[in-house]
Image (cartoon, rainbow, N blue to C red; front, side, top):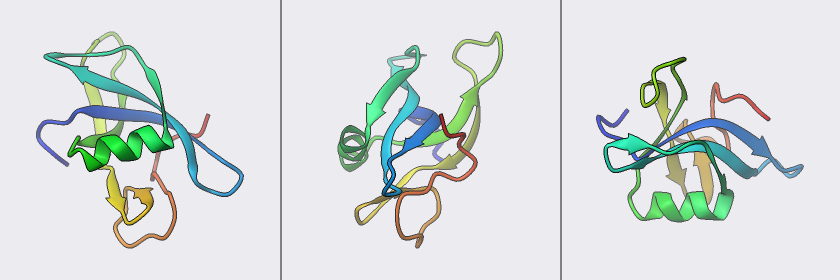
Length: 97
């Protein structure tokens, strides 16, 4: 897990073909985090290619910019995953909405 990250993915929606359709995330805006935003798969891949660091997790209740952080999100070929070597999109322990 990176010490400083640019976004926290809280939930994911998968398309019928198993690829990520979009994620619900919080993005870093300077020293603070945004409200939740929906990021489509292509935009998420573009952010990862730009070197942005995303992790899985969820916001701590009543603590604004504090998160319970899980695994780092990786771009493995054309797949967005939290486990290296897994074929296809897979975000472990991220709830589906």
